[in-house]
Amino acid sequence: MTFCRDFVPAGFDNIRIRVIILRLISQDCDMKTGLYKAGKRKGSKRAWLFLKVFLATLILGVLGVFVAPRANRLMSKIFPAKAVVSLKGAAPEQVFKDVPVENADARAIQVLKNDDVINGFDDGTFRPDDKIKREEFTKLVVTAMKASPHMLSNSHCFSDVGSEWFAPYVCYAKKKQYAGGYEDGSFGSGKTITVSEGISMLNKTFGSALTAGSLQANEELTRGTAAGLLAKAMRLVR
Image (cartoon, rainbow, N blue to C red; front, top):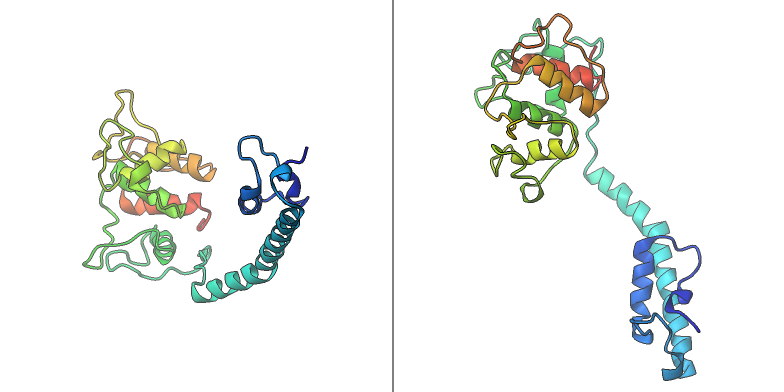
């Protein structure tokens, strides 16, 4: 007995390539048994089958070896990757009008802004002393991971998280086990996040070993302090 899979060249472990080749030869196969229809086809059909497999293998090989690398190089020139620049030891620059260079978190805020992790407000401020909410901090962390969760598969994951703007970030963090909720099944959206809660999420996400240090574990995180802790967890600043 001859099985259709026997016509797939050895060494083709790539699932997509195997599927393409099997689709090409499907008209000569019994899709229920997987057997080649040798008794229902003439010898020329068998030869034509071998030719189709050969041509498919040749085309896919050319695409993989020559076309794909050149396409990748072209795309990298058109859309160059933006590197994250560490500012360890470098003098910070003022990137928001309410964050002077003397601010303890100025360097962290600068590097995170340069990497499009944080944004300010329309008036050019960052408001570093404002308290940050749990959902805002979670979005900050997920954005730093360069993840782009979609609402379709990331919503309604807590009793107080449905399809709000922050749902994709919160539900993504929950799936990855970076963020958790409370015993009543809520996430605590709308509440400010504490230092200990923020540090716990950062350590789980980035594998860091941050501690509260001079901060009080139960005090509420500010936007500036949150940026500073995030940059430390990502090892972008000291």
